[in-house]
Length: 166
Image 1 (cartoon, one colour):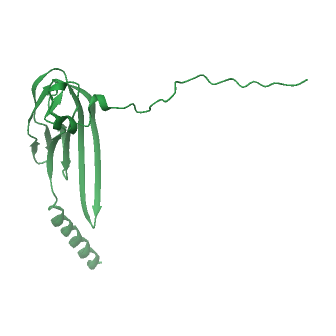
Image 2: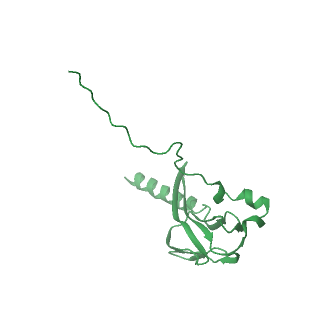
Image 3: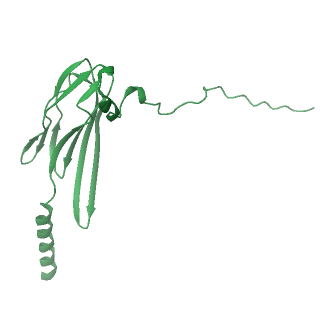
């Protein structure tokens, strides 16, 4: 019985020691720093290996929220090492031309408060965007296809008639 308790204590101790070496971060990524007026900007907040109590996105008053917050969670355990990633993403469209600032997002954990960096987003007319930025943005409005394309218009089904011979 003492051996079993000793093995349990040692395994918990090793787990606590090796569990602290994980990569812990709170990051934000943007699909582009310059968008056309009708294009969509993707903003993604990624939380790695942190248990948090609250997530507050920045004010997005200068943008229309097309989608979000979309949440993604993944958990991996490989050879006894676990990692956890939680993501919040937003799809935004600018309301008008100009330069706007997306402020800091705030993540609250039991021990600390973490902030992301702010970012300037430049909104220009669609025809004034550099070619490299146009090819980078995967949410161009002109390239979006319908989710369920229809090759033929919908028609009423034909009634089946039964003909009885006399």
